[in-house]
Length: 286
Image 1 (tube, one colour):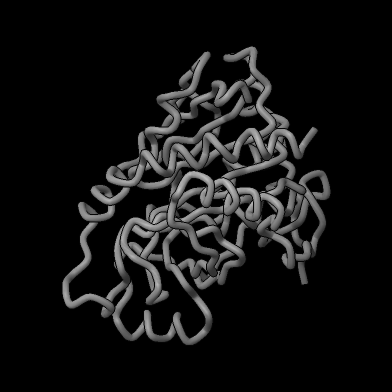
Image 2 (cartoon, one colour):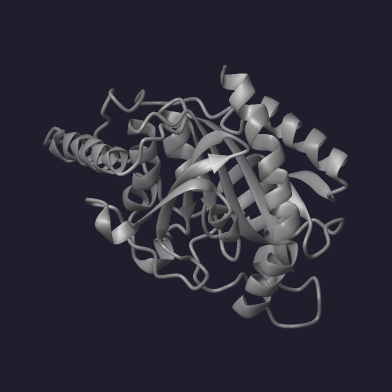
């Protein structure tokens, strides 16, 4: 029986370090907070002050987004005076990327010094209390993608071999976001996110199954990023925008244009919530 090779993980660490150093040469800011902006939600980054925009293709080893609604730009600037790194778009496994490649940007952000990550996504609503356009703060997730970014030899410089996932979604950040949502009059829930591989939307039978096992929303992203971030000790707040009700709930087909349109409609509320919660997270970090 062959022993697993460490070379790939060492290379991953070195590649993440190289990419991080490249980004840091392009800006004087040193963000401790990152924001990953999902489908239709990239507008937040355009409003940052002291903005530096770096296309993904310029960053060494960085995967390139091909999904509609994902600009593929790393934006570094200030939000309410707080330096942040905002990813305008992400890559997905359904694009053909491995779980390790999907998680690589989180590795880079970690090597840049980021210690808190706000991950956003467009999701299908399973919970019948939800309405199209509401926001859901993720309290937990279910990984049904059949893949994990930690598979393979572990590099202790990233984190431990068997990380505990009990608190993968940081409760104090979630509470701060809920408090700010109430203050702003934004409809917000807490719920569990199920991640499927995609790219097709789920069948009505799959949605019934997901509801049975405790999922409130469903999507095709986020979980690999949460796992990699938590592995490194980065605290995570994940927020879903319910851009459509999942298959079988409404008697009509689902299309990606609807997802983007809903994201556009609620982006003002979403940006207001991000602007309110980022200073809270920064204060918590000291």
